[in-house]
Length: 60
Image (cartoon, rainbow, N blue to C red; front, side):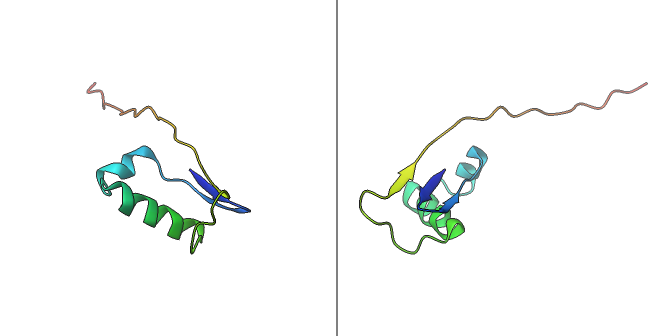
């Protein structure tokens, strides 16, 4: 998750599978947030983990 002022965005960690390059990942995340250029000291970033669940159909 990134934030600069009131602009912020997040991607689920699974997006790493589609954008494994850190620079590309950050570029797309900034685009999503509408951040054109980071301002020194004003761009904040957080990371988090998720759990992935899957459902299995039961045959009756």
